[in-house]
Amino acid sequence: MFERLLDVLQNVQELSVQRIAVEIWAQSEVQQYILDLNRIEQLFERGVNADERVIGYYSEVTQALSAGQTFSYEGHSYQKIAGEPYTLLDTSYFYRSFRVILTDEGFKIYADDEKDGEYLTERYGEKILGLTQENKNQLARHILNRVIELVRAKIFTPIS
Image (tube, rainbow, N blue to C red; front, side):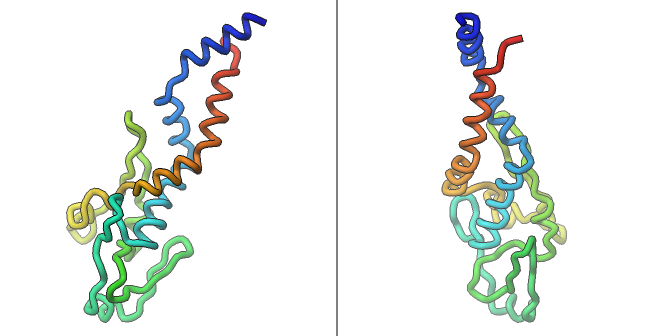
């Protein structure tokens, strides 16, 4: 009985927040969730960057030039209407290029932002790739049960 207790205490001592985070961030469903918070909830639906700032608004000229064309991504569609926030969705190449890159600090969102010789991050700022504080909170709520299950598994796994 004491051997099992010692195993549990040893496992607790060896817990690493960084290793747990990396295991969670590496899960494909979690990565998809992160990317959709950025692409769909922030850029597509609200046109905001990680600081909650609107990245720009469509002009009447843009509305006229797009001539009622519909732009679509993953079942979401819109038209460029004057006064509405930019979505940065034209060909959907930019949205499809989004990736989660694991780092020592957690993760970073990467995308191929080159369009017609210009970089979207230079024009609209690096923070078009990143989560708002509210979306970070939403992500934390989304992964909480996964973290709990992973920590329990690590604590109660017998030491070999």
